[in-house]
Length: 118
Image (tube, rainbow, N blue to C red; front, side, top):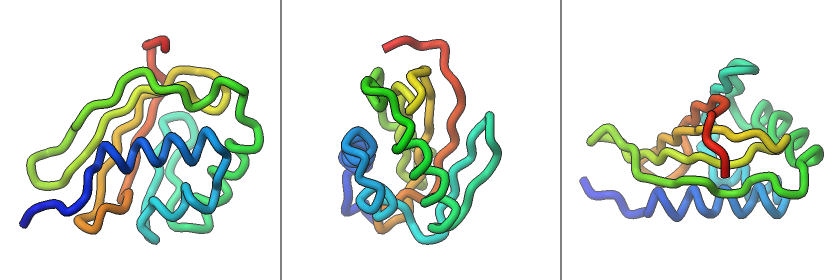
C-alpha cells in the first residue's frame, strides 16, 4: 500500500496553521482520536482535548512562535512520520515527532523541549 499524501507537506500546513493562529484548520489536520503527548504536560487525546490544548497556546503565542528550525522524514518503515524542531508558542525550542494515519491525518505527536536554537 502506498501513501497518497506527503507527510512533510502536512507538517508544513500544521506550522502555517499555528503561525496564523487558525485553530480550526490546525484541528482538521488531526485524526478524530489523535493524541498529543507532551513531556511537560502529559497526554491530550481527542478533538475536545486538542482544541483546549491548542487554543490556549495559539492565544498566548509570542510573535516569533512556530518558526521552523529543522524538518525531516522520520517513519518506522510501516507508518510515515516526521521529526520537527521548531519554536514553541512560548518561544522555547521544541522537538516533536508526528505519526500519521494512512489517510494522511496526524495520529499522534510526541514533543519535548529541545536544546536546539532556531
